[in-house]
Image 1: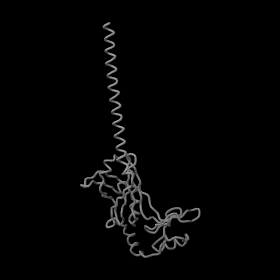
Image 2 (image 1 turned 90 degrees about the horizontal axis):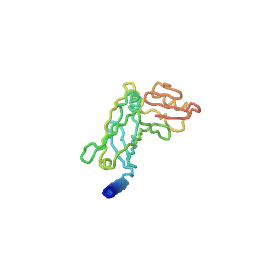
Image 3 (image 1 turned 180 degrees about the vertical axis):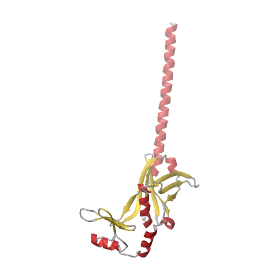
Image 4 (image 1 turned 120 degrees about the horizontal axis):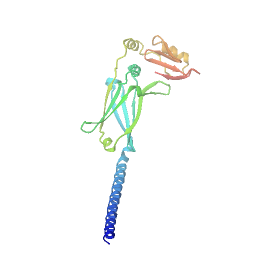
Length: 232
């Protein structure tokens, strides 16, 4: 009888412990679910894209714009420049061997403390071209994990860079002496006319299949029909 009573007592204790742990698990589960629901609700307002602009014209000859938003715990970012200065062609070439060349985007809080920094190698940026195929800027796109609280503390964008803004001496002379030449990137030109206009800036060089250059100015044609591929 004592053994049976002992077993019954042990069973009651085990059942009580199981129910206690089960209840605790349910409470924790509901609390966690509630927290993530609250966090997702708070994050909803940050799903709208926000624009950040850094005016670098006085030094780099362009403005840099960043558009950011948060979606499902990830920061999405699109970065663009509004022009492509002549020196940038040489920096893009140099960046193929030197990945340190590029930009550093620093998002700081209202007190000026750095909250988040994003390195953008120049070699990872793409050219933006207009309707005539002329390169008019650069772009970069990325996304990565970030919590909402970090993103919510962004107040300002500061930009740093590792670029040489000087043209090579020979190209600087070409730029000065032929600044007002004909526009070889104008629309609706034949291949012959484009090359004729391009050659007015200096010695014309063929740099590849369908590709020609004078200094930093370039034009590239599709080889199958000689239509324009790109121009800058």
